[in-house]
Length: 66
Image 1 (cartoon, rainbow, N blue to C red):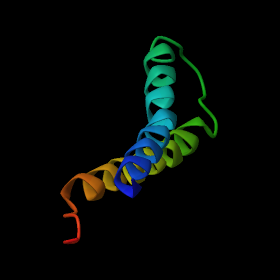
Image 2: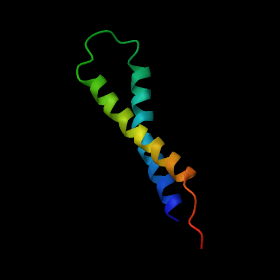
Image 3: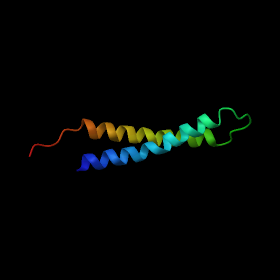
């Protein structure tokens, strides 16, 4: 049960990184100052990295014997 919850939470944490990646692709053609956006993208990728690690941990953890 906890494993499924960890995987679901990990997938939710992946969403900010996917959104940031989409905005990066959309802004590639624009010229000019980006301002604080690269820092925001970095924070979103860090959150997504946490989601990847959570999913990885949930899939690698063994169930305790019953």
